[in-house]
Image (cartoon, rainbow, N blue to C red; front, side, top):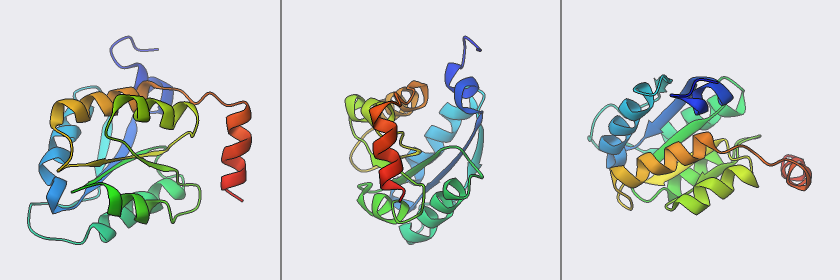
Length: 154
């Protein structure tokens, strides 16, 4: 495992990310954060701070994760609520809205979350980087939690 980037090696080094206009700036910072750590980042949009519908970008990311095109994704909108609602409608997607490190960690340990959702108007970039790092580096515990995940996917 690469000592500089254990998350990239443990989970592959590709990730898809998307946002609406409200979180565009934070998405751009997170892209740089990820690329600096060796990730290949697919940007599903938005392309600017011009007003767009979060639904379009949530669907792009969730569909790609649902179909197995990417092992994980990150979604951002103003609060994260809309993106969470969109993403969790897709089969095999377990999107977790996180605004603290403990939730980011537990979303992986117990829920095997495959999409991290954050609110660009709720958290700053330093906390967002810590959430992303924690979420990517934390492994799923399996065991009794796997049974629950399989029950969700029925």
